[in-house]
Image 1 (tube, helix red, strand yellow):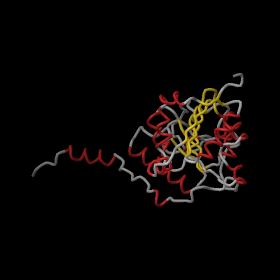
Image 2 (cartoon, one colour; image 1 turned 180 degrees about the horizontal axis):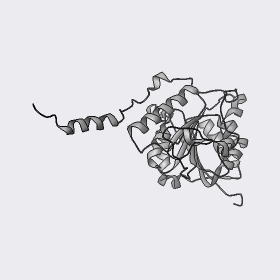
Image 3 (cartoon, helix red, strand yellow; image 1 turned 90 degrees about the horizontal axis):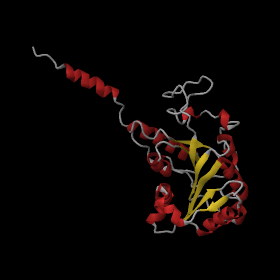
Length: 268
């Protein structure tokens, strides 16, 4: 009687230990209207202050759970890192996924108010983490309203980059108060953005682009970055082309209006 090679059993056990590849979610099952009413009560969860935020559910490889909670795969001790990039209204997460490998040591967070879209991005990130062990642990998403609760999540001068890519243009004049760039909101962005940090804006709507430029130019804590200085910025290429909306504009041969601003110090 022939002996069964022991290596076969070992290989079988090893195969069982390797997690099966997870299929990426399909957008067609997570479609939702393009924009949401930011002034509605969306029953969002948010911390009282940044110190109360438990990031372990979003970044389990970097944050230990608070208050004795158990989070699968979470580390026992914080890595000491904090979220540095914020993609406001991140949509289907194209920018987050692209920048995750460009800045692998930087924690970045997408913020999206639409339920199904947030669910899609979250499932996509979890699938990417499973299929590429050691990668995409630095990126996550939250369902939240950045126009209301940004200071609840981020400390003063915590962020180094903020992205506002193809935001809702709110064409009607009475809706302009809902635009993501306004004088009041810019002061909040200046609070959470560190001196030297950058705000990236891009739109295919020229009127909205001019609106954002006008208000950023007028704000005392932001200075526009000349286009020639942006050539060496590795984020800019992805700002233009990584999002679903940016790719749609590209297919339709539309215009993309980019404007980036640096957060200056109070003394500048």
